Length: 111
Image 1: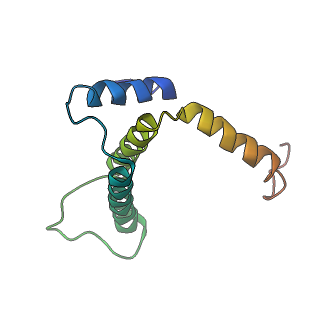
Image 2: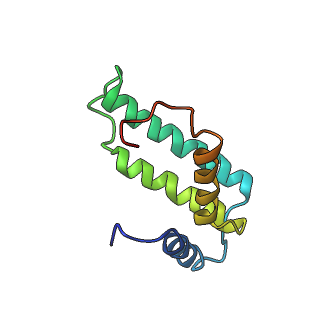
């Protein structure tokens, strides 16, 4: 697998996977619950690696990368089920940051 996939390719990969199953995508509320669960797991991994609460020896070994992948998968499922183009959504948020928030942070010299 390549790390150079476009957002459209990622969305298509997930749609191809989900399309194999009669059940299809979960409902938006089910996916929101799943997203919350995955964010909790990501939070736990960040806490273990960077926070004061270290992992117990009996706990399963997961990684931040793995948990981010799970969050991304659920986000893509949610977007696909609602016909949301994530590249377009990303462009919109970048436009917002580049206009509304353009003077919010201290810029590095030369930028």
